Image 1 (cartoon, rainbow, N blue to C red):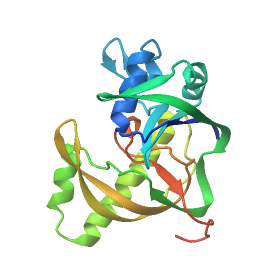
Image 2: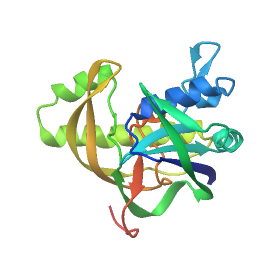
Image 3: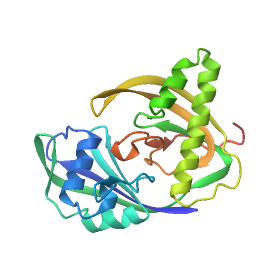
Image 4: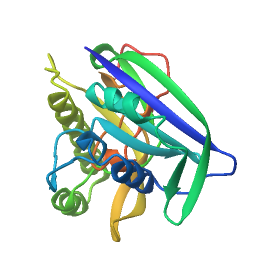
Length: 224
């Protein structure tokens, strides 16, 4: 299937310092009437795959809209002259816009991806399961299954019926992070799968806050 994506990047007249969560907070507060910008409906969290996702990539604020989220971004992308991240305000002097129809779904080729931002793979329950596994091979298989589950969940939210088995392999390292004042385990590195994911879409948890953004890295292969 094809996904419509709208990717917005922002530049200021000085280096921008801030987090993906702060970028999300700016858009959510500024345009509160658009539920897709903040994933809340009458104060209740919307648990489906976020159709608007926020990133800070090498100091560049990026917002990615998918399908309906792309239409929302089209409505609001130029309706402000500055952004506020934490205690700092930044004048916006340039906006980069990229609108695409992009392929998404199972492939007959193997594609290699790199995590541009850390992958938040595990909830509290799965975190304990992962730590209880002593063998490196068992931990690796656990992460393979987790990534497969992430792709299946993402597909379901985007109304894509996966026609066959998703295959995955991962090469990642643990990275500790803070999320909402809690220490969490994230992973950074690469993975391979017979699945096409548009660049900068997120897999895993908290993708709207910047986690799990992926970038395709190589020419497709025939084997995993």
